[in-house]
Structure formats: structure tokens, C-alpha cells
Length: 146
Image (tube, rainbow, N blue to C red; front, side, top):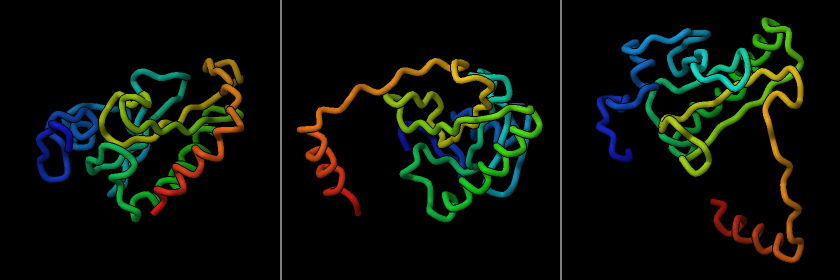
């Protein structure tokens, strides 16, 4: 697992593993045998929180299917609680994989970001695709589906 020393199910130098072990304090929202949800200390909006696995997985492709099967139902439950508790109309789910994708902590996690207005988080629209190349890009992806 990268250059981390893994101790049991946790990486010694992973801040999220240390939170899961109770060595670093967090403001907890939810815990069960597989997951912990806690407030993000660098929130994009008020109420932004994280859902992490207790076991250390760096990216989505490492997370076992049995754990992934629980992620969206749990995210739905927690995001519904955020909508009601914060009285906000919307939220984003964000999950980054790899530093090139914006992942800062190398431990799989899902951001749940309450939204009050569309401009609360700056976003840029996508660039229109070159339609002469789009089918070839799709074929490259299809060829790797297992």
C-alpha cells in the first residue's frame, strides 16, 4: 500500500486511520463496524463531512464489493440527515481517487457537501467533446471492462 507501513487494518501514517483508531480527535456523526462519518476540518461548505472506511484502502478500486454495497445506502441516510438537520435543499457527493484527481488523504473517503446555493462552490462547465474522437475514447474504456 504505497509507502505506508500497515499495522493490521490500518496504515501507521494515515490521518484517517488514526482518527478511526481514536488517536486523533474528530467530531463524529456516525460510526459502525465498517465506517465512520465525521466533520471535515477544511470544509467546502458549512456542514461538509466525510464518510471513511475503518479499514485502510487507498482508492475505490481497493475497496471490497461487500463494503461498497453499503456505501450508497449509508450516504443516503447521512445526507438525508444533513438536509433535514441543516435545513439545506441540496448536497454533493464527491469521491476523489488519486492525487491527480484531488485526493489529499490517501485513504478512501466520500465527501458529503451540503449546498445552499449553486454558486457556493465554484465549478466550471465541461469543454464540449470532439465528437470525431468520442467513440474511440469509449472503445478504449469498453475494452478494459472486466
